[in-house]
Length: 127
Image 1 (tube, helix red, strand yellow):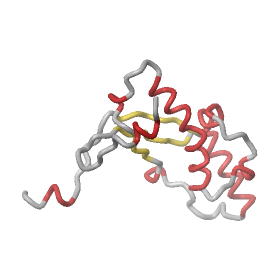
Image 2 (cartoon, rainbow, N blue to C red):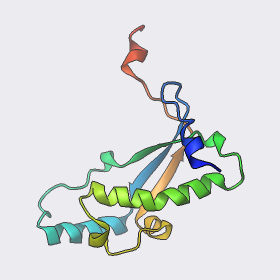
Image 3 (spheres, rainbow, N blue to C red):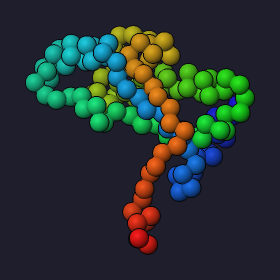
Image 4 (cartoon, helix red, strand yellow):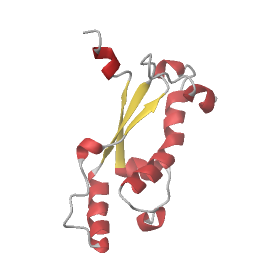
């Protein structure tokens, strides 16, 4: 499985992609509460569920080898964990845990969407 080649198949204009939805678990929200308190930010609204990450990935149909989609996701999880920490203005050092697939799974859930009904302004010009 060549990840770079797979990622090159993403075509937003043709809606040829799938999605990974990343949601926080309670364990992350507990950690964030303590982290924000240490930073003196507990009075601010620092988490908005509507802003959860949506990751555009190659169309799931392209993962033709058995287990290749799971392998792809598992390889992405440490990178996603790093990105999510950054979203909350935390560093790996602040987090104090290894950035692994297992750690990601402890603090986040993912859901897959085969496709999405996305509309662009250009879709509406002829209506």
